[in-house]
Length: 226
Image (tube, rainbow, N blue to C red; front, side):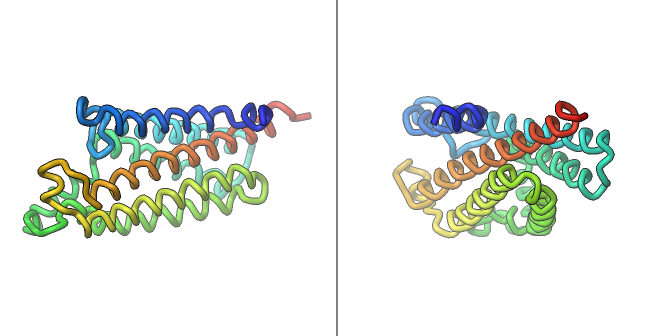
């Protein structure tokens, strides 16, 4: 058990902080909005943004390691794409870019007052989401044979992310405005908190997979070279 912990210290540390963020929501959200998972520019968004920036930095480092090791462009360029996607997602978490873009496009299309308008960003971002998923499939395939543990973590993280998108889509359809106004529990609140929790854990698993891969690659090319 201790050996498992030693080999996955980063994973357990991040999962521990995930739990802290989740518990802070349930205990302090009514006193301090900063801890509310259903909000922007708060502890959750800052923490998620930092995790994504960390993933972007690790992926960029992996790209440089592979290029220096003389690996082909096909094997290294996917890491650069993952770095770019993660960097954008980190900015999005901290600045709520998808909601701002959705608001602007809704205004241009004249659908601001349409029920569920705040969730229309998913339609506008659909092509980008598909492109990102294609990149992630390429990403997993490129490391699956040599780094299956890392690939499994990354794949699980992506599945959690897809699940979070699905929960948000469902949440947009079961949203109860009255429940939002008076602060009572509603299926919408349950779905949105569930989505944030799934997203948090998925991001941690993805981070752990990328970290594992970078560590293994660095050891292979620079620590155990003859």
